[in-house]
Amino acid sequence: METITLSQLLEAVNGKLLGGNQNLDTPILRVDTDSRTIHPGALFIPLVGERFDGHAYINAALEGGAIGCLTARERESYREDKFYVKVGNTQRALRDLAAWYKGRFHIPFVAVTGSVGKTTAKDMIAAVLSTRYKVLKTEGNFNNNVGLPLTLLRLSKEHQICVLEMGMDKFGEIDYLAEIVQPEVGIITNIGDAHIERLGSRENIFKAKCELLPHIQKDGLLILNGDDALLTTLRGKTPVSTVFFGQTEGLEYRAQAVGGDGVSHIHCRMTTPNMEREVKIPALGEHMVYPALMAAAVAEHFGLTPNEIQQGLTQFVPTKMRMNVLHRAGGITILDDTYNANPQSMRAAISVLADGPGSWKAAVLGDMLELGPFAPALHAGVGECLGKAKVDCLVAVGEMSQHMAQAARESGVPMVYHCVDRDAAKAVLNQIVREDSTILVKASRGMKLEELTAYLLKLTEEA
Image (spheres, rainbow, N blue to C red):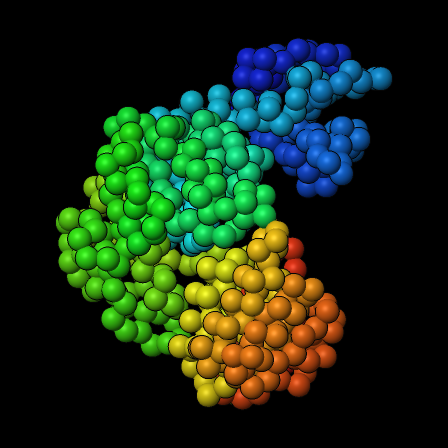
């Protein structure tokens, strides 16, 4: 973050200066929202949620080094060496500050949303653009109404392009985020079942994702999945120039997987308006052609050459716990895909498992959350997919995964365990680890199955 002053903060959030430090030239070096990780010279913004109120930690944040804070309430006392800025709503003020701060940077912004593959697409786009530009991108899960503003507040004068991921689980959230960003390029990866519990149908998920469209700059670009039945209905109906990507003939950006080593990368034949060549993607699974195509479309919009695109794809590194391939002694491969899960990403991960190395394939899968009344059937569908993929073993973890386990048994998976929690699963993992095998670990974020990945690493030796 570039330094701003207290005077500029007051302007950005339309705030009122209370007691304490009244020096309008006081420098602010960064913004923090967690009192446990305060940095010296930071502005502390106390957020309020259903189960917490950051105002209770203002004093701790100031003691920890914050130079001042926002507050939605009057304080009983004020430190003379700290400033206090009153606002109507601290989260709204965070948004307003981020929008004001973004206005200082005259660079293009790329916004990525969709049901599946947002993070991978964002990482691959940033990797390709980085061959020519200095890129700021969303880190981790900072893709919501708090994380996105905090990402914007990391902008500095060295950055030339910003790539942002936008998540949502209800109507209005994409609109809220996109209004801040006003991207030059907007991307919708696909429409799936993630968050269907709240939105009720894929059609509603589609409508929620389309909240991005009105905020794309008039001379900008919209990039859509041409293999997605709902997104293809937008052809000829979008407010800005639009291109489609996928594996279907006739799309502006298309690719087909043509091989790979099953261990570290795939090859695909990519065709775009400006190139046709075979490229290497350092990731597993045929579905990885989709983020590669999105990256190519963004890159060509910003003038990158075919060689730069090809080079950038080879520099892609997935976010931690996003299909990380961990090689262990004895020919054991662990696929750590524990960052999140939904029915579509589960199927893609199972495909990677089925194509992986080793003579024995095991899946350690946990509950997929936020599926509401659709959950039993959608979990059963994953179980059926395991049988069709000829997976040898399933360790299903969690309440809903019992439907996955039952369907897996009925679909011919030879070895099926259902465990109520992670501790119960550990006892099973002791039994199933064997040489010359591939083990997939995947579930929704709330299941915390990365703990089981760590346990598998303890049970196996580093290659």
